[in-house]
Image 1 (cartoon, rainbow, N blue to C red):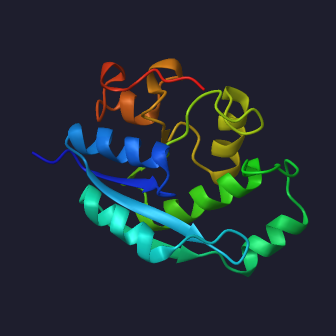
Image 2: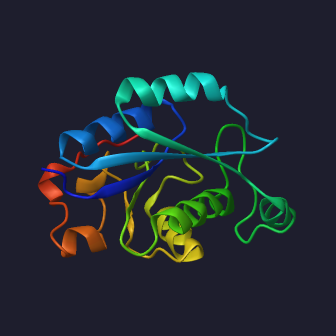
Length: 167
């Protein structure tokens, strides 16, 4: 029995693949949402192949001019290397929110402590606030270590079903 749709921010990397597998195992229909732009491109054929192998739907969105505007004046500053800035992550989650609407579950493959600039509790809170998603981002790989989400309060997912991975 399907428990609902989860819109997973999907890079095609290990963390998003693990998150997709876990959410599927828990009975959710997983829809991967990939954001692309000239600044961060991925081989979309390879990404589609990964999604197909996982048995998930894939939606690819192109970041627009609003993304470039955000980059000029990020609220939280810039990230380094392969560490997306807090503003970038919030932008991506806003795009997922546009697709998911008010009833869709929004998730990421983020792991607490994995990236020092953007994957710690305060950064997660800042990202959610900036995206207008306070308490509405499920991070199933570290969910046992994080504050309760709206989805847990509503009984959509239980804390004990989530993992306690730490970077």
